[in-house]
Length: 84
Image (cartoon, rainbow, N blue to C red; front, top):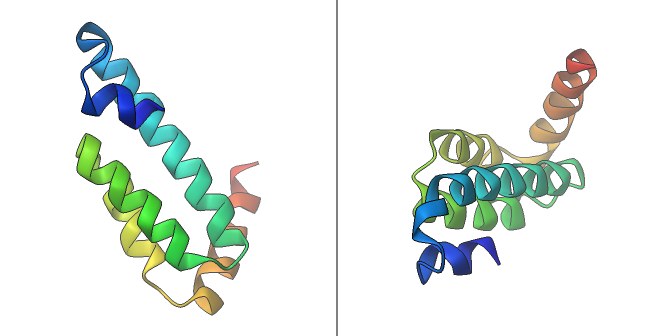
């Protein structure tokens, strides 16, 4: 829905807010997919968000998702553990 608003310029005055929310939603969705071991789906969502927003965070997360799921899941779990 957020990508629709950006693509069709439904609210041009709110583009920056929409981009921030799209990046956050894509990043959270990718995080859950990576924890489940579904790296391919995480990469698709992150690349779509990067194309729409140009967010460096989405691109870095995409590169992280390119690693094998056997390495991605434990690394992400460790990072999330220390963020608490």
